[in-house]
Length: 284
Image 1 (cartoon, rainbow, N blue to C red):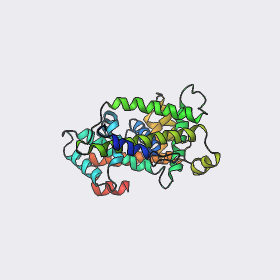
Image 2: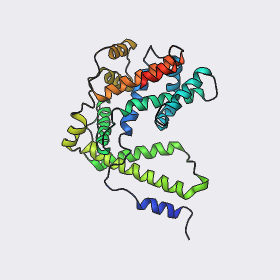
Image 3: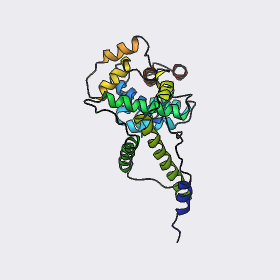
């Protein structure tokens, strides 16, 4: 007896990648930058409450912003609709998606132009830096398999939190095949990320991370973001000093500054202090 969807699962499983780095590499870096921008935004005296509240209440919705098509038309449409009717149904959540799209475009600058392996090494560096910033951090893992298994375990717990999937009833085989392939891609990503984190190739780390100046924990914006992430206090004037001082040294720090600039433009547009043409020019 053949179970419904059985052939689809078998076909997808047969295409499981080996040691190749999936195209998904780089998403962790972009997500980390977006989340750090949101932490910094909460400290800003220059952003309106609409922007702050949308990002604070609907942070997960903001992560969907990267799925909006390039070009900015949907961002402009959502911002314009919110400005016209901020109390409309789902307006704050839709605003969070548009703001997340702005942050996704800023974050992309930290990984664009790189092959998947280069993006993977930057993801691993982000993990390394987040671990190093944690209070009483233990030495980082040196066993690639153990590191990969930990990532898989964390991912499985997050998946359980989703509770439900919404199958495509009209194409259940196709839906199952896509789901299994996505699952396989994620497992391949965790395996590759475990290797890059726990046992990195020194030459590749130099090429993709150190030489281009990807991350510098001395950058003022990075210092503030890591402090906020660990629950420490920071003052709005510290953020203003960081933004108005010398440029950030690293690509990561520059992406944070770019993200905050984009949020400031959106906030000004929503407040009526900037029109769409000027806003679009400010984020191009």
